Length: 384
Ligand code: OGA
Ligand code: NI
Image 1 (cartoon, rainbow, N blue to C red):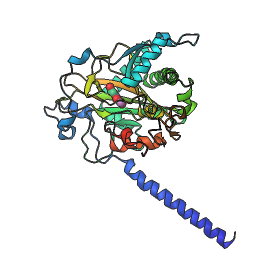
Image 2 (cartoon, protein in one colour):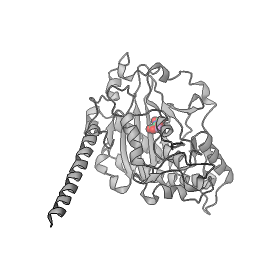
Image 3 (cartoon, helix red, strand yellow):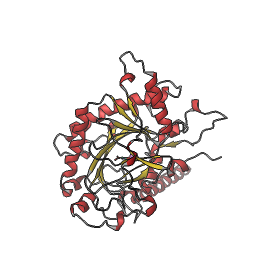
């Protein structure tokens, strides 16, 4: 090797070293939580009569406790029966209802969705059992902000942040190389098998809804799926555990946020209300229909649709009487491909509202900042 070549090679190596160093420096912030983790379950078990300061929300964010009234205003409930006929035809009325719900609400409930009701109950009850294990039996699954996989009690790494009144568990279903049974709980003994089956059925439901979302915009059926990376999409599950709270009027189970991913399929608690959806300037408490799923549009679909479909803010309130368990299944684009408004939907009169960004980059925001309303998607706009 000539001197010059060698010196070029050294330069390259040094550059690589520098890159690696930057990565580790950046990474270190994400390796650990900024302060010791306190399990909300362990606070709830102490039967406190007051709420620790860390969970007291500023007055402007506290729930308004007039939430029994709006039961009449519920998010749309849509029967999917006519949608998945054997001959591949779809009911126009159902299609139109979904279209309106995605534009006006960003949220809807679905019944006759194809996932077996017994499987839904089994999934929720296995997770309830898991969360009822003593805290120390779950600490082996304790998560870190780098991947969020495992047992967690906060979102975001900002030191001193006001926290939400919930614990959770986060795991990957897809892509296959991220699905790691060792990172899933092993107790109760049926849980892995049940989650696995549940995930597969819910993915099928997501694939169908993706086709409807595409068709409803006049696109070919698999347009959204293709934009998500085809078969290489991501899917993960966050199970939320909201213990009883001594002062529910001062706290939130989950702060206002929009889901960063593509689409969310929520299995709410069948007994206890808690999810609130923002409609204009009021919070609507969702009344879950038996064995329905709650579907909502996430930021990535809002971006692909150039804001025709809305990713809507939602939050969770807690109560002092009953705990609550919910399963949020996130259907996401492949994490390293750029997501931007679909070409078919933009024109000179209707320019793209968002610049391209990968989901990996995009979700760093919620992973570091925690839930913050719709501020992320709203700040992620193309320069004008
Ligand atoms: C979520 C979420 C709602 C609920 O996990 O992103 O919005 O009812 N959950 O737990
Ligand atoms: Ni959410």
